[in-house]
Length: 194
Picture 1 (tube, rainbow, N blue to C red):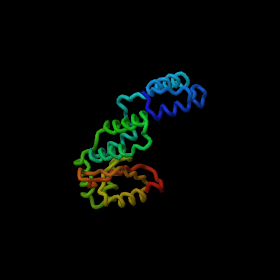
Picture 2: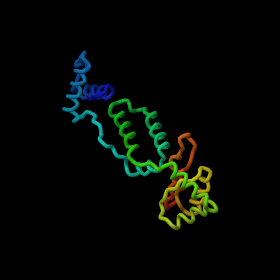
Picture 3: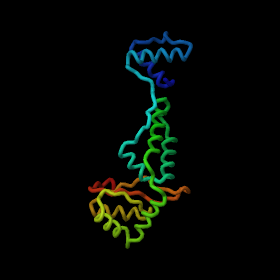
Picture 4: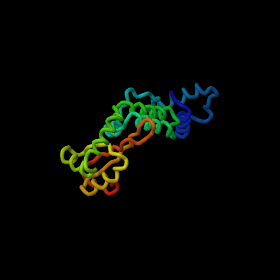
């Protein structure tokens, strides 16, 4: 199948390359589209758009998605869907749908797990005490959900201990309230990220 935008671009390319002339236009749009498809296959090895079955996100994107609660993931999908500029062709819409499908593949962290992580950080004397314990007991990198008010403390600790910190999409409850900020702490330093 070919949509109007792709068909029009192929028509103009075929004319520019001398495989079609403006006089070859047909009144029947379906017949004209079939002719354009035939010539594009012949001269450009063009293939019609086809769906990708079971599109899978890249490893990095899957890891990013796994840090989200279901509500945060739904908001992320909504943001993808409303930002559809440039998806005016079948291939573009197909890519948009495939990206939305790929967002549904990785599992989500539950709101309960997010709140438990935030709650655990509050059981320590302060954020540096939690991070000193966590960084020595567990491997780096690690990702943890912090209270939104504690992000500055995490940033200061990372900077003073030579770690990178990467803030991911804020986790939100169903009412939109921020319930946790997933931050990945890695080895290395980079001024732009801290």
